[in-house]
Length: 268
Ligand SMILES: C[S@@+](CC[C@H](N)C(=O)[O-])C[C@H]1O[C@@H](n2cnc3c(N)ncnc32)[C@H](O)[C@@H]1O
Image (cartoon, rainbow, N blue to C red; front, side, top):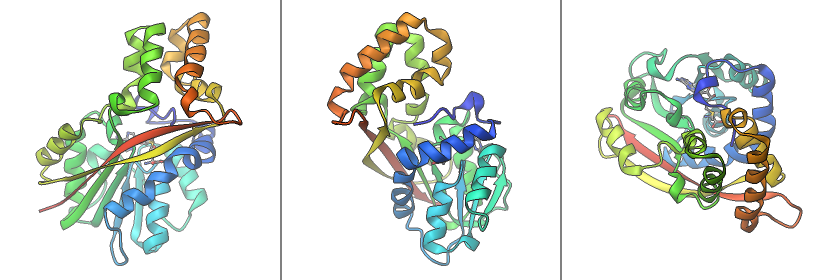
């Protein structure tokens, strides 16, 4: 996963956006884009919007399917967009907030949002915006991690970190999984004017070169890293080696199973 979280989502340094594209997109984010585009039935002739596009993996995947001219990516963060423009200058990248998308009503046939809904302060408002910019009969599709309780590797990891660093650790490490209740997600769609959503669950993999690299990403590079003592950090690393042992392969790298929900609905 990554360190792009709400408190820092407005502006991050370009180096962080380049590191996201170089390390986290291939190791984690790229695998979900074909699943999301498939669930939304992205097909030629559609106009597609990627909301909270980051460096643009979903928009790029859609562009490979239907042509870059019909795809737009929007994100709050200029550094992410700078990287997106460098990688795929042929796609239209815009700066904007999911809470007030800078597009006309009904401008897109398909509106996609991958690994970001949990960061929006008002999720129903963001879904309303996605519904607004979708054409009547158009599709809104989102992809988010399932709840921590359902995560085979991150669940035990966060339980262990909580034992060593207290309940603060749990709340700090839980942001990513905050949209994990699929019934809540379905209710949010209904409230946003997107009736009868379809939900599905998929299992993928979070890859890290080592358990140390996971702790560096999930603890050291997050607000939790500043709040714990060196001793707690050592205990978390030792504990991580134990709870993640089933997912550590012969060369020491980690292949942690990771579960996501995909929710799709049509604008009436
Ligand atoms: C974990 S990244 C996911 C990026 C991309 N969808 C992907 O799958 O690689 C979350 C993204 O949400 C963006 N973001 C957070 N809050 C936002 C908001 N209110 N409006 C637009 N983008 C937002 C961040 O800038 C970041 O690029």
